[in-house]
Image (cartoon, one colour):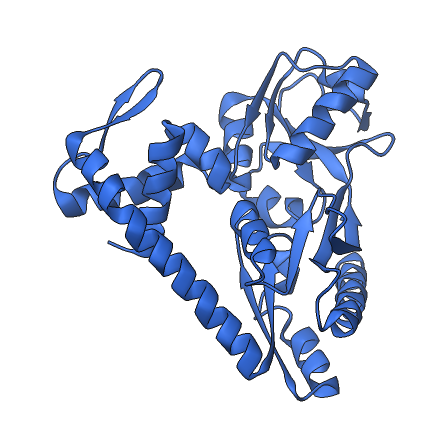
Length: 307
């Protein structure tokens, strides 16, 4: 039994449904079911009973929730305390990657982090991937110094630096009426079954654009796993919205029956930004790092265009 398992179990308990918890945690329902299943296998008994309206905790589930809350609170407080101690003991910058991980992961962006550390030898950069919700929480409680995030407008207490923008495109299965088109319009979404992987903020922006263009799909299936979106489009013969280059280069070769179609005019662009607190004591260094990240992403895009 791990801290992560207990945290996810708590979210399911409080939300009362797998789908609601998965949306809050911004992971796929399949992944969350696997985590819950592993925990139930460890106990040898179910923690929830499943029904059409959601899940209901068993007697064991209720007892686990009641008993685990003090432990979770203490572990969270301990984690925050240790992170604060590390930051005070050394000039370490903790970077959270909730977007742009494909390019900015510790392995892929090693030259970027090393270049910054070479300019500032007293500063150590540590980066790690986080889910959207967790990343924002850690930024708010000051565990993270900087967070990369997409499709998001930060509040007045934060500085936001746009790093890179990709276009969103339509994912279309072979045999679909739109398949042979060269471009698509927002109006082509009207009446279609659409699979979409996006956070709550961009989903709201999408609905507003649908209102503006009078192009509401007949059904919008929101998923938190981009790979699952591609699988659903191919298996269910429906359309989806993906990010050109950022995801399509990685996933499209795995799905020969799918192709991407560009919108004739820009539609719901995907922008990755760097966000940090306005009152951060190392604000100047974080601004410099954000500028280096922007230049790095531009160079990576140029490499892709040449290849």
